[in-house]
Length: 267
Ligand SMILES: O=C(O)CCC(=O)C(=O)O
Ligand SMILES: [Fe+2]
Image 1 (tube, protein in one colour):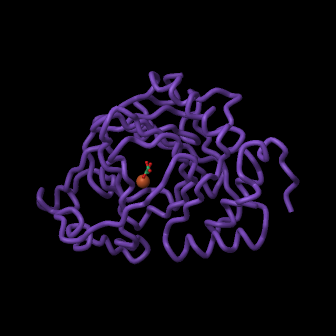
Image 2 (image 1 turned 45 degrees about the vertical axis):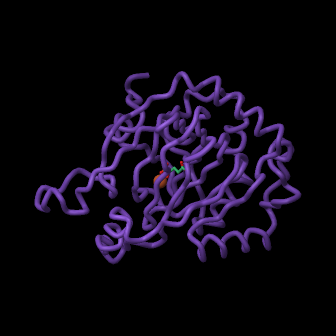
């Protein structure tokens, strides 16, 4: 049993979410398996939400906006397939982000991210033995910013699971849409037909209703998802906590350049 963490108790709503309690952990794991997504509204308390939102706004000017097109599988184009094949279909991602090294050392985001209780909770819920931070200085905690008209295009994640915390919701748009289990990486099933149905609007995705302060756990490796363009002046601000199941992992230099516009050698 992990020890009590007095700092974490000032940050998250332990009473509603006893993340060190066996029964609660089991409930979360069951829900994630069943739905592919787990949402915990009011995960952080209101004071912390306010503090983190102000902090994120203060650092917004540092954000790197990669206006890029990419395919849904986040790979290079496959020239052996026709250009109009769904594998090569291009979507736009225009949101920006700041990296771990640009978040203040004393930020509560770093307290949450590094907390043993939090990490053990996540590990149990996503069914990993232990979770480790990224070795590179950028990838562990990111804050995403989507200003008016900015979006995150349809994609499958490379990672097994994602953990996000919404800080600010736009007036409209900025909605997380997803379709569960469309491809099956283990069976080499790319899910082309199902992907095409979503892209050409023959099938409707699900929408995730979330408000600021909600922690989301999502399995995005086989579930296609996107964030729709922000509408209005209020920027969508969201934290991504990223972990690995093994120690010593860095994001590749190419991926660092693509996502962050810099590599750790630039520091
Ligand atoms: O912004 C979100 O809610 C989801 C982010 C996401 O899908 C990603 O970073 O891969
Ligand atoms: Fe994603």
